[in-house]
Image (cartoon, rainbow, N blue to C red):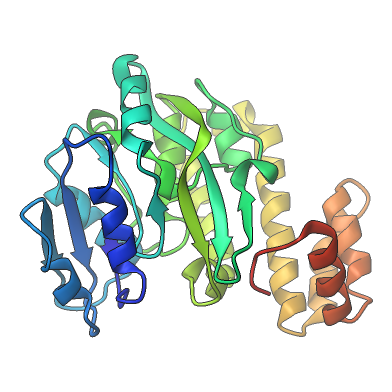
Length: 300
């Protein structure tokens, strides 16, 4: 578990691990320099929770690495300070590691917000299993709160989490693991991902675009014949990042730049085409229409 000023939801997250029907686990909680009551909450539990605190905040990628370094298990799972595991999560996932080629086991998840709205992750994403690096790279579909990884798969990598990343660190790591290891899945939701406006996923989405560009540059260097083998997937990846950049420009009021981003994709990408014409409408009108059509639970 990684935490930074997480007192609001932390106890609920920790309790969801203590409620697991599978009992052979430890919690390594790495506190990234919190100044709230995170430490008091963590240290109120028994010896199954091992608490560590950094001297200062270093960002999520590096903090995750330091937490993993402290872990003793052959399998490593992840739960952030504001998310929740369902009671049978570990019990149902761990048997899938009986296949020695499996490096990652994941599941479906439930998005939920403070208003009580819920949505299955599978309603928005298509999952893949087996050796599925191309799918995971171009259309990432994992929720970190569902993921369990084999420690030996992690140890085959030259780098764990990218230390400079704070949003795409897990997507980068799990995608690199999938290049040589199989993914297996429990198809039912086994975790809950809390959606709230203070979450980094929603606050720092501009940073995500930058990190994904860095990911792509890295793969050209570390994966043999990457450009030739995965040309189609690279084009999908690039287009997705361009669309994300355009959305960020539009949200920040830079409509002209948003449209300029989308022009190269206009006639060969449906999402880019729709977004381009949406930028001619008032944002509040677009958000309200989308919210009503999709029943959106995500913050604007």
